[in-house]
Image 1 (tube, rainbow, N blue to C red):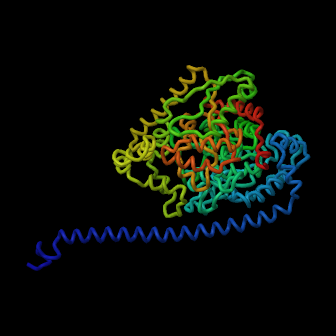
Image 2 (tube, rainbow, N blue to C red):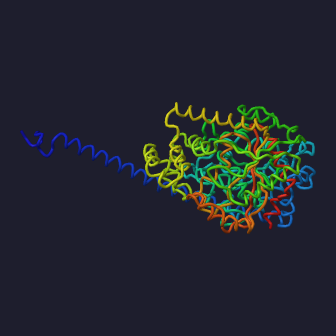
Image 3 (cartoon, rainbow, N blue to C red):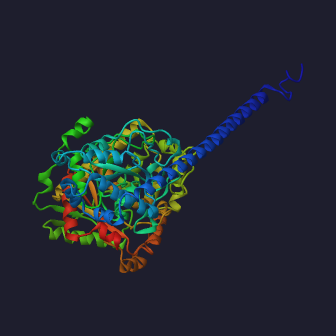
Length: 595
């Protein structure tokens, strides 16, 4: 018998089998590595071409814009309140084209400082020209006649990319325009810029490898928030008067809090939200919702009125035909407001507590009753229920979105967490983690694995529904009509440091879990006294709190606000509270930015 035939020979069947397996494994790895390498190289080339095209296009647009209107005329228009802008547009004192040129001019100048523009909307001039050709009677039928609006980059516009800051979505232009954008344009609005977002939109630091970093209009070293951060910066810098954002954990309200503007996250399902964007984190219970962001409450009210028109149901049949409730908005009935200054697991800084106290007194002056109240079981709702729903697939969609792409620092931790096998997370959570981390961080670690099975998913969803019912019952027991609380436990954090304290989103994410409408209202600014108290009293019990305290240093002059929330589909009650606060406090976005 030859060596080849002998089971004892150097080419025995087991050895041949092992050799073949090793070769196949090595070949697979080589092919995978080669494919990944060339895909990454291709992505780099695509990104560089996109960046060059954007830079060239925006430069040409900016050079043209600044020749069309004088700085003085632009300021006269952009310094008008929303109500006054609508008045002069309706009267014909200012044309739609002039209003557009004014905001384009302002946006170009401020964008050079803060980088909130992804790209200009090329069709804006044509839309404005058509509006100017309308008769006076036709104008009066359009509540948003000639109002320039900005759009978060994730809103579909036919012919434009919606990249979410991910290279894989470059050169994949949308085939249609979002229903909500169509509604606004139909009622006279003029979309003129698309604004920046974080890579994947799963962060509150608006940085991505395509459009770069957007900074806070009150401090260029600070974050503008996210994921609707470009909207926050544009409106906060008075370069837009009304815009659209999206929200699944605070993405409309965090930029508003950081940049000192007004915003509203409606009840999920109240407004149309349809997206063909290639990254979808939409769970079945905690879901993405769209909403308005503006310089004052009137702008939010105007947007909600338009988006609640009967026509919205015709544009998108899946939107419930719920008309805007003028009676609720204009009611003189006293509200009983439940107020809280903080909850587990994240402590609140001094300036945020002071803002809530100021808002409490303002609501009392407006004739409302304010009682102190704590939402139940927030630790479970936010460290377990929220994470399990948002990462329902264990982060698979998230990882796929950035595969072979450049990873921005602010999302690397989430990527690594999403790539970690569920068994390893559970092992770390039961062995090493308790020696280092507090309970809520361990819960967040295990919950990020998602539900695991369909039956577990149904169970998790049922628990969130039950939690919602429990909170509503607690409110009914104390006859609470609405809620007042901090919008964020910390003012705008430094760019690049938001990732060090992701837990601060619990104050906004609570209302995503509950599916309550919630609005952000700017109240005051950080003072030296606030910082001094925090340097003495703010705890450093874990890595998140240490990061918060670090960012409180040097925060003097940054905006600080509150949240107003109400029961589902009572957006008008929420807006009424916000309007009362605006009237009593008198926070003016334009004045505060200029100062």
